[in-house]
Amino acid sequence: MRRIVALAAVAGLLLVPSPVLAHNLVGRLESPLPLAVYLAGAALAVALSFAFVILRDVRAPADLRERSVVVPRPLVLGLRAIGLVGWLWIVAQVIVGGSSDADVATLFLWVYGWVGVAILSAFVGPVWTWLDPFTTLFDLGSAALRRLGVRGWQASPYPARLGAWPAVVGFIVVVWLELAYRGGGLGLVLILYTVFTLGAMASYGRDAWRANGETFSVWFGLLNRIAPFGRAGGPGDRTVVRRPYATGLLGRDWTMAHVVLVAIGAASILYDGLSQTQAWFDVFRLPSLPIATVELLAFLGIIVALALGVARLVGLAAVGAGLVPIAIGYLVAHYGTFLLFDGQRIVVALSDPFQLGWNLFGTAFYEARTDWIPAALMWTLMLVAVVGGHVLGAWSGHVVAVRDAPPGSDIRRRQVPLAALMVALTATTLWSLGQAIVKDPTATGLDGQPPLAAGGASRSTPGS
Image (cartoon, rainbow, N blue to C red):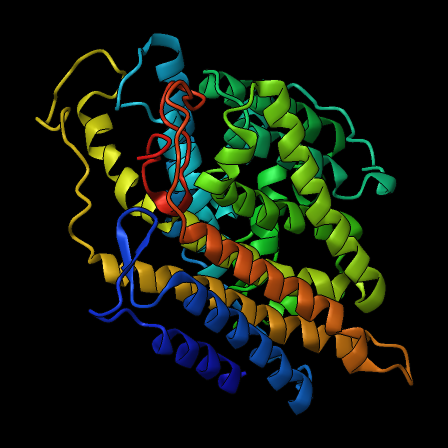
């Protein structure tokens, strides 16, 4: 494992920007090499990483050395309070607010949630376990009913045949809202989702629904398999599992729904990058909502079909373990700067918490600064995130494929399709990061704000 990490670091260092041979990247970052050269180099690095782990025949560690750690109670209560306050703030703005940069729906859900919580889940631990406002609301409601002497009904057993498919359906809806829908009302969507989730928890049990049907719990839980701290119990349990980095990927509990969910996660970010390139715009132009929906679903379907096709050869667990690092690598590369730059809007929201034109702290007209991080550093981090995610995916996918292979099978030949898929995805996503990005001048996000842009950059108008 140390050698694999070292290989990723070397691959990144070999491509660190230098002051010569500049090439425009994402409209604002300068790469040191022509696009074709660094794409070929990155793809070669991933191909070599596969050759390395296959030739070295890396196996899963015999002893994962897991141990239990108790999370401090103040930290747990603090996280639950943050999640609840964020939910209440969004609802308050829906009821009394207007439309301005002080909007917290996109800030909390897209920026801090979709991006920030995902990164923390993958690199730190299961923070969503306690940030989750739906569970906190359910627990508060249950406690209030008990104090009033109201007895709840017995929850029905969760249907095993459903598995994690409800979470997959919810995930597709979230992706559609982010990448295809151009209307408003993200706060209203949150309220409707809350009502649905609380009803499902009441019907099937809080923990059963969170483990299978609640979209964000399942998604962040899959990303958390990389982190050194993993979930060990329900949201009321302060115990987590301390384990070697990325060994959570080696579990045997992967299902088809899990693999489909992770494939959609990686594909959606890749689609976001590709759909903003000039080349994509030249072919598809600016589609209407129905056409954009068809394009998105078709693209997701192609990637999912490829993932399931490879899974038939190497197993669901190998593909799932290989795709999770890829997905988080894409997320960091495409949306990391979005978190760092657009996340600064919190100072605007604090001055005008209900979008009523207030300026409580004198920061209502604050404009996010983007000059505090060198462009070359951001380019390097984006490249290392993508290539590093693939190297880690190569390791985990290979280890699981070797472990689960039938006796006497040709392990190396069986893994060629997985290697080819991952190398192709690497080259494609890096190509999208290296293109000029375009913007539909009439498009807005769910609350009237511009939608997410690849790499966190603002989308430029066609031809600019």
